Image (cartoon, rainbow, N blue to C red; front, top):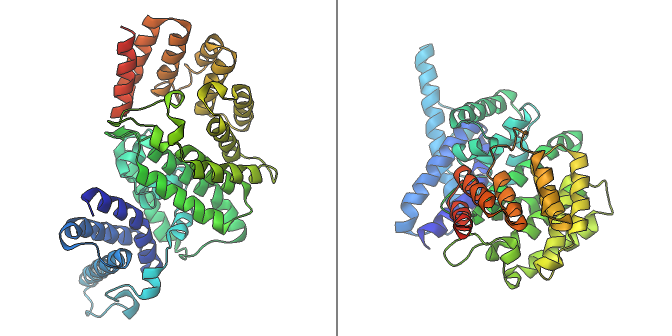
Length: 411
């Protein structure tokens, strides 16, 4: 197995190992530190020693031993401070390795709900879950929230402490408690998937491991709550969007826009599954934002080519979405759909209203869309300037190269 494949496996196993260690020992913060050390040991040893027969059990065992050491060290420190006679920790804290039940179970979904505990603010719920379950670095989480990394570090640290102080049991919530956390859980999975589908920075356009993990968790959640229409809608949205993955990049990793993609490369099985999910979910109601986004994705995926896309229907769905929440990204996508349905001039008019919105004014997507629409109306100089402005704003290298190439074509 290559180094890249090992890294992908470790990213998949990380939240499972962390969940198992937290369930057995508690001590969320220390458990995460111990799990990170186990992952580092695996990344160092597995390329030379080979993958263990049960890699998740290996990670849990190593993390458990490390956590035992940490707890012993902490207890010793406290004993020294209190100057009391040394004694042993409780036996259940000192087990050197994970038992079979711990190793064979996947507690990722429980961990997900735990990170979305109501004692945390919504922003902290999402940040901690992206870090602990999604596997994003603190820097990546900070970019998702558009805040400095130091700010996000403090936020995640406070969230871990709040969970520790709350003393909440490591179990799946039920009834009203579960309903209270579900909205945050869905939003977290949505953000993890989006980071995988369009990475905020780095050399690759997408991070398939994150998108795949988000889909896996959404499948687990749908299996747990099969009658929840928004859970089904989110899974459908992920499947229908991820179905285009193979066509989104060219031979050298360059970005290929949807209108130019080879639709024969789209994953037909995922499209079929996604369409079936959203078709079944919509009549059940109430209709939520994930269902509407999935319906939009289905319209794109079912069109035989870009010219056959039903843009008026997409416009109508985006208008329903805009009625549910004041989201500038939805407004931007609505402007694109209107431009395709009614002409680029009308789309440019709508973009003007977004210029003063601080939530998106500095986002690269705003000048990128403006550039495309200016190019459609024949304003080559304006389009070129906007493409270059968009390239300056994005930190994703394939997006930068694409935008520079579009600008270069215009002289």
